[in-house]
Length: 385
Image (cartoon, rainbow, N blue to C red):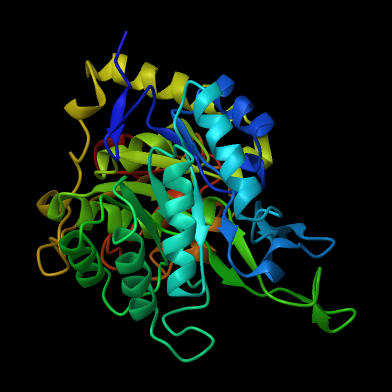
């Protein structure tokens, strides 16, 4: 049986899955469900110094259909508790549960960062996650640069506590590499990549923003590939722990994040969409894959596809030709491949579809859009016609 335990922020976790800060981790009852489902740790719903953020509008959730996918669009910022009640729950959770429960804090003053962080340490928190992310981009509402806000918060917290500190980063920064380098120099133990982006959807019937009249965070499968790219770049270049966050919808996504170098994988939207039990499915898939590959533990493959193993733009081999074929026995003459081909390299002669080698550049799009798998490339077989 493969060993899926990891170490994150100096904490031993039974699995690399962490329930991310959200409404699904707001209290000890829900944290118990995280533990029972198989999460290795949980980050409690964020405690905000700004009391306005402790009250959610109604409604605050919407499932937006975009093609075959759903976008989870939500506006829930903070725990509805103040610091005293929140600290009590952290203390109880880390006493009762068999997994680490990490508080998440978001403050607007230096004294707030210091005070809230110290309260969490005094309550027995094993680590702290700083929710410093500005979801609207690099510039905050008062004109500050997001990097400056992050550094000031980190400086205040590190001056107040000795337990490990992780920073949940926004996806839009002037330079992600420079921010991570500076945070490591300051003494941060881990980074979470990334917080959700904010977005806007509009009700065209009423001609106003949907739901509560403003913007909201959005998550789902679409959010996966951006953090995976940055995890693959950052993880080999830092001594900090890197947790991936965004778009995890399957065991395959967990595996990909670990291959890219993530030390842990935070899960949020998948819990809302599929329940806490999704963790068990992810873990079963991860273990089955490790068995198949012969990996005894996560360390044996973590980071295998990161750093120099991911080619840069100037290193990518260009201009190669790969023969494409259409299997006439499978082809249903739907005409999709011919209509979609960007290079007009597919002909239709009396219902028989052919690749035109002279103009085909082997882009592979026809293989992707064929609904029955009749278009093949390279050594995939098929009858060339």
